[in-house]
Image 1 (tube, rainbow, N blue to C red):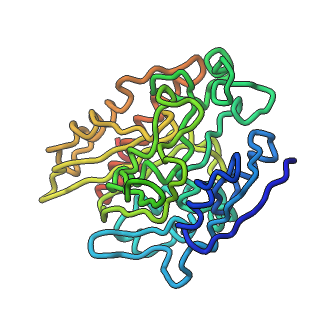
Image 2: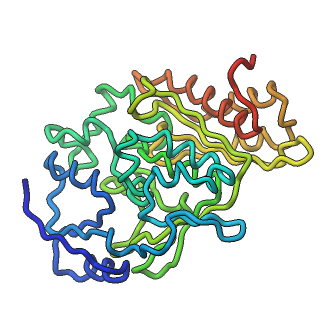
Image 3: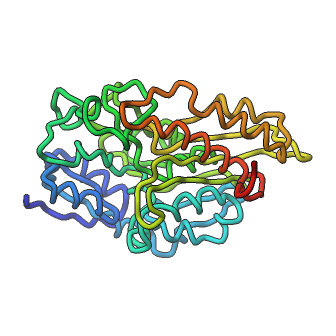
Length: 332
């Protein structure tokens, strides 16, 4: 295992300065550090500096709080704090349920919001040091001709990872914004935080060197829902999941936001589903099913993951029904 220095700055500004200083070849920011330490142990990365952000947080500031119609989540808020927040359960249930569905209770009590957004892909070829895949500088995405049952059914390639964050798609249906310091901008939409592999194979996010996430904001979306399918309901990565938020007036869906997870290299918006839902009655299950059937439009399954097409339609339908305040179980 490689050796590295550890810095414990007292502010986010100082953390950004350390990363931008040029004194270190491969500085890394860490919240809980779960994913970084996995990378070090697996021989995938050898940072010479770990910048611990735990000391940069203001202990007097609540990890989650409501400011008018906006919810603010500190970057160091744990997944458990988000999932168990009464405010989020009331104002943005899609977020609480998506995060509460991630990982295990033990992980949720230490993993942070920013860390969940920026975690690296879980592709077994990328994670295995024996495969020099595209993402590690090689010439091949081994998923194309190899075992790809957990890989993407959307996206242009050439790498076919799926985005690992449960938090990001939920934020996207709640107009989530990521707030940063250390660069020329103060914030960016969650949708703009990530890029597809054709825009940069070695990384997944669009943060500039030295930019540090300080907090996240999102709009209240009480009519929202989440649904996921896993191989087992205890700790497991989802095969497909969906997040939905609705603007319902007088029993009619005026507009919708729907985003899929675990099916593409980035959180995958579903505009065809959104357009089909607009104008439908919130209790019109046939209209909701027809809209959900459009979720797989443009999908390009690989040899082993065509099953995700059917799963995606199902989780989208369930998420939308939940957003209407009903339970999807037992519906025709």
